Length: 197
Image (cartoon, rainbow, N blue to C red; front, side, top):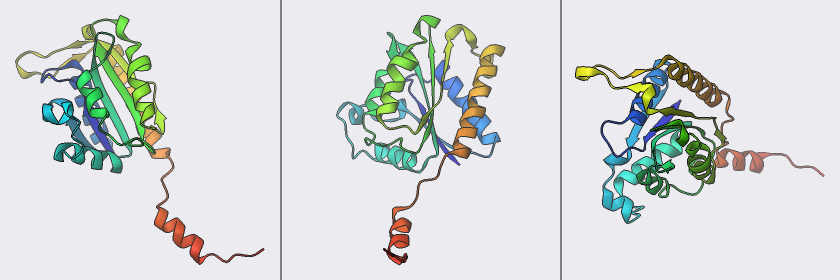
């Protein structure tokens, strides 16, 4: 299985990035290959000028095409997800998430931003034709404490439990999802079939 992990924070130090990193390590422990992209790694000019032919954008599109699932993690700014993430998602093809399982993750300053996942992020992911969109995770900043002196960040137990539950559901959904049929195989089957009336 292959998962694309997409970070929407423009900052190097990010609570949404902490959740994405935890998710990556858990999935790798289940034998899942995880490829990580962060909006801050894309040239700003490519995003602002919608350069569909950017090598980094093409690389992302190719990995998304091969992926079984996608985890999107973003901070919430002013009641919506990261604008840089929206700009990057706009560069994906119209049906980029067809046949994919998607887990949205967001962090914000308070629980007042919780609905940003359902009312801002999920509609964009649905427009990209996600096959199965999971409930998602929202964490307020007080639930994630940065470690001192390079120590790993700490999650409050309730958040840790919700994240692990969501990841287990995500993994299970990818395992049971129907595999797309290769159109060439379907055409060969139709051509070689015996037809009767």
